[in-house]
Image 1 (cartoon, rainbow, N blue to C red):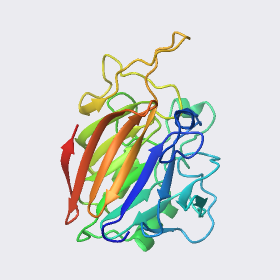
Image 2 (image 1 turned 135 degrees about the horizontal axis):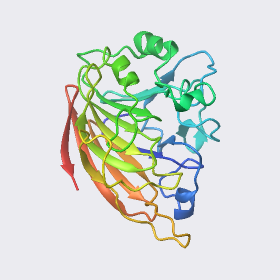
Image 3 (image 1 turned 120 degrees about the vertical axis):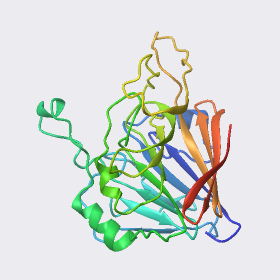
Image 4 (image 1 turned 60 degrees about the horizontal axis):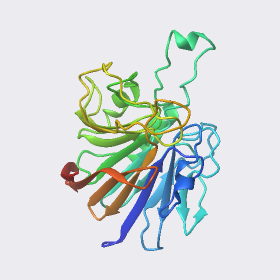
Length: 283
């Protein structure tokens, strides 16, 4: 991305990629799992996009069979060779992880012994040989995954965070889905795992679960969650669908959390200085 340019990213759980200016109907069309779509408005607003060079049999990052996944330039998909990737420029590294490849265990037994959803050796090798994170890298780290690292309300999948600890010594901004709800977490991390500002945005393509009265993991502190009941004629206790919009401008990023009606229900701005994330504003 050239200095002064702005890049917009939409992160959503949707049946089709959700773009800037999408209609309410397009935003609300569900698809089984999460998807991430990147729109480059002009040729100048570019980020380096790289992944594993050879083709991969891994599942796509956030869904099994999405119609479009990966970089979209001037309205056309550039294609994606693997289910993990890195978008980077001089200020940011946005890294997509495949946590779903080992998320299915033996039939029936997986209900008693839940898969750890660890990163496979291919991804660890890719981190070490291609991405090559450094402690002195001044860029901010944004991670994307399907499974949650931690949760106040549901199961944890901390194994990938422990695997990544060898690569990242500073807190990261981490977006995930899997849980069908929206939640903004304060910084948290398990022993031996990376510290992360967790952002659960699994509220796009499935009926949204409202927060339970009693949390499963009270140590995960919620800063904001959407507790509104979505009116419906089926007497369902569900919340509002939505998505997150990231606007990157030099070393700053503004994130807007938008509901199905187009209303911004929460927003925050971050700055990265010498690899350290600092939130400047929230509302």
